Length: 335
Image (tube, rainbow, N blue to C red; front, side, top):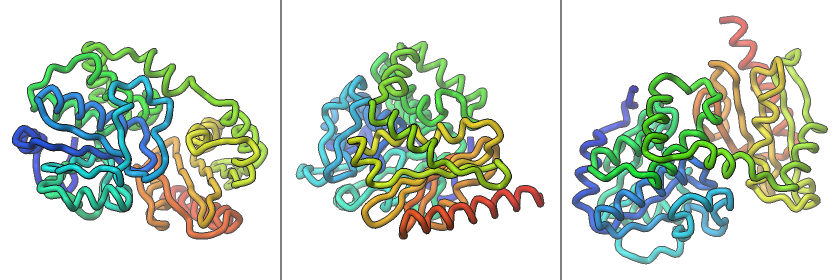
């Protein structure tokens, strides 16, 4: 494991800070995935066990938590960041590297807190919080949360283990991605030994597809376009597709993995039209750094998985991203 230069503390020091706190507000990034939700809810359980006053907030002002997370203990306790009016000793930011990923309302809470903490596994160019611990070698933020809770001296029971394993399974694609190593599996084994059930998590997170998501999948297949002699693929969903199928944002989550799974494809890109921009997801099957492409549009993530928002039309995004992916593969061929 290797922390970033922006890291200015240890998990032990963060634990010490939390032990001194009374009111703790916990938040993940906007449009939270399993890692953000699992990290926040695991920390909520641990801090409540220590007698702390804990609130978990959604960075998004209006969107609700995805229903697939309703099996996680404490998922019904979320409130929107703009609705929180209480005191905050400590603001704990999990799985979000910067203010852009926190959103406006959560960033205001972050600034309001007497002490701010970030625990994350996304490398970032600048530190956002008073105490920051970022380890990009960790397969998920929940691995770091698991370690942090150990320093708090809290019993690692089934509920905490379920939350942390959910995040780990999310960010490893159920242990299919290249970020899985021996340490990752060791941590997963600890969580299972503590009571987490991989089957329960898998059913809830990966086997609760809506009809709309299946319909979007057929549209994505129809629109998909192979580039770079089949080494890359790009597809898209427009706003009419979303309206026609009655789909919500969560229904688009699996589309990028569909593209990535095609034989011979090394890099996949899924584009989703929004009102004033185009949201994009990138995946690679090997060590190609798709986060370098995402960074050009103000996005980020990991080498093999990244996201961004393109300020332009869907048609322009298709054109530009096809060129960027082609350039990435050309650079890889030269090396």
